[in-house]
Image (cartoon, rainbow, N blue to C red; front, side, top):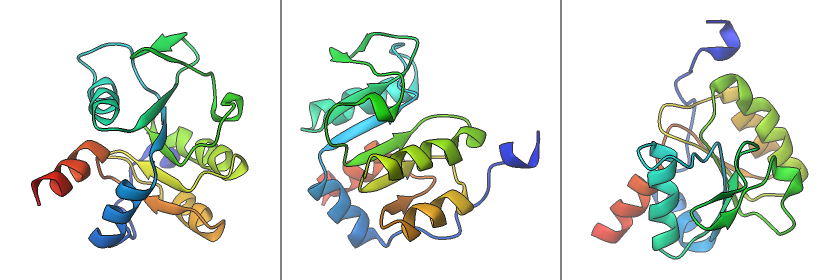
Length: 147
């Protein structure tokens, strides 16, 4: 692995109450790397979010539709406002995705469980976005539902 591909430990994350506010406030989620295969974690998370009132927007250039939603090749191709960019891609893809998230004026960059890139998280927060690293949106939402 190159240094860019090595997963880091998250340097910081928003506190639990801020994560709760993110999940309650923002409802449109672009899922970068959403798979059309039901056994994949990205598919399971996308389906869960969809079933719990979120509008999901698949970002996968190899597929035209996932979970009944049109799939886009990249964030810049999405014709509507995106609140959260949920990343299911290799660590070395994160900097480019964060740059795109900033350019489309997303509100949050969310790196799924096992993904962290501190430099990109800092870049996002410096640009006014919230950045969540190495946390699963489904798991975090389920914690809220259990309360």
